[in-house]
Length: 338
Image 1 (cartoon, rainbow, N blue to C red):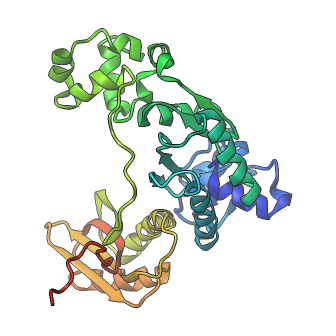
Image 2 (tube, rainbow, N blue to C red; image 1 turned 90 degrees about the vertical axis):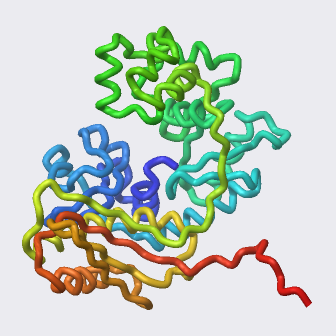
């Protein structure tokens, strides 16, 4: 989906059309943007950017609070559309997923167009698609014709497609790995292909084996349907210990926003049973405060933070927040014998 949260806000508020819009943390706190639209990105604003920094880059940025109930509702509609075309779906996030359409009789590009049209008809939201013979190629291709477009790479086109592609486009390559490859004279996948498997293993260890294939557009990872989870959490280890409850509360709000963004991927929260806050102190001891029956609200997590922090008052090295779900019933569980 194209700027999913922001696109929903603009759709529901037509007066925001063509204006820079961000969704996420409050302007007067240490909040973080969950996402922003393309008008905002023209100013250098991006997802996960502190809100105060985004406002510095784009003073006219309109920052709206998240509405996760709305986002989950729209995601459920979109997920239902996807299942009309294939049952093999691997969600990456609330607004992105891999689809294995190998068994579908339609041509891939035409099928992608049909799916995107169905999504727009149902939600009035645009989407983009990448079509390729594997997950690596499809993911990269999905970024090439945004917004509201699609790009196909056929098996015969893979070699040429990868040749001039920047190495940073390969999954698993971050800033550190990119700099290491630049030192080796490999800025593109074509340049990286000059290295043998042993040479790449010598530099990158086990990842070098994968890198040898990935820079050639080879990726044998299957599309894996989502599996039920027992819990969902996010945490952060701090460079400097937090010594007061107020400092912990400031960090808690950022973690809460991240957790809610992840939680929004679930179509329903009816199986949510508990919320919890985990603290690791500067002496590496830990404590967890959790409560059943509380909804996942910022105030609920704050009460658990206060409880956990008050147990020792020690400087805090790490904060984690999360939720627990009811154990799913195993469909293949053995029946009692008569």
